[in-house]
Image (cartoon, rainbow, N blue to C red):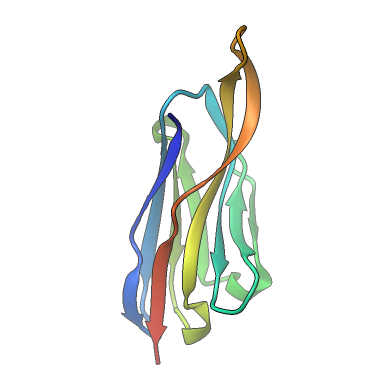
Length: 125
């Protein structure tokens, strides 16, 4: 069974730093795009940052210059280093990955979207 397991998060003061990790495990061939989304109370889930397998990154305007996404393809792990945190960064952060999994009786490769369980990041002012 394929799953994304997140770690990190917690309570931090404004201006502080937090590092999130997300590791994909289970039966799959490889990971394509991996990224982080967040959802604050009463708001829609939004993309924070993403990284392709080749290392091309994309960031939400609100986190550019403060957050850095990176990944270790050998470990099927994606990281989000969050610096200069602000109270408005408070949200549940979700890991997302497009994993190539065996599909059907012939176990042909098929890309499927997976989500982590979410980890809370709370930034106090």
